[in-house]
Image (cartoon, rainbow, N blue to C red):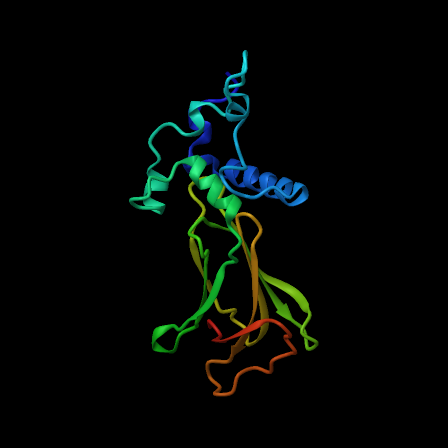
Length: 207
């Protein structure tokens, strides 16, 4: 009686599944429980056969047409419960790769979720001479409605220099890289600060 079936629609409330996945992952890590379907069960499954047993999460959790999931995972019959378990098991960080602009224009970074589950947050920082974040130049969050996108293009910053891009998936898997942005009017790239442990993407400024 406290929610409608539409409240669980992936079109508007995918964050419910992501939040539940965060909780399950945290409990699994603390308690040493495997993150698989045989170990992660519902209240209904735990109480099965008991008099006055619970019935949650109930039919709305899985019922109804799921066109957004069908479009995201064609031919796989992914339900909200399956989407949740994919989030619970997801350990792959987003992929970052350079996209070269045709005709000498500004390049971009393609950020893509490796498991097609969705991106949550992307942030770009300008680095100082020591390679430390000095100023945030761009930030993006997944929209509150509709399925979170699987990929996103981040244009190269307009000013040449060194930048750091950090991309996060729905359950917190994170990947970072350094963007070495060169002036499109010069052949030599901008000086690169020390970047231990980070991939470097050579880009051209977007202006």
